[in-house]
Length: 126
Image 1: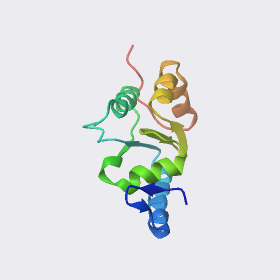
Image 2: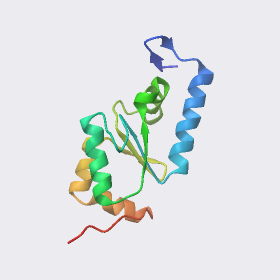
Image 3: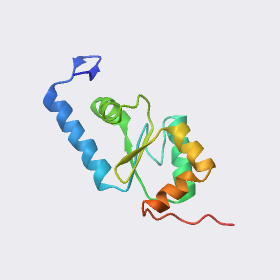
């Protein structure tokens, strides 16, 4: 067991329940953003950048605030084996964090991925 917090290792049953929660959210929502804060009030610049990108693209998504739960904040990092937040998932698949999402958006890959996976997006004006 690698997952630890300031209080020490998390009990296995607690780890399983947070893993099950994360798995359920990732599988039952087309687009999920694990972030610091909420889409309406991001509490970190990186989370805010991903929110702006998703809002600009016009894709519906669910934002989950990792600041509400230490278990969620640590659990999502273990679930993805990715050390930072935010984390974007599309159709159950981990896409990446802020830098990856921004790069994919800038070169058109993010919009193509949404289209390829059957996620509806609002067409950009122009």
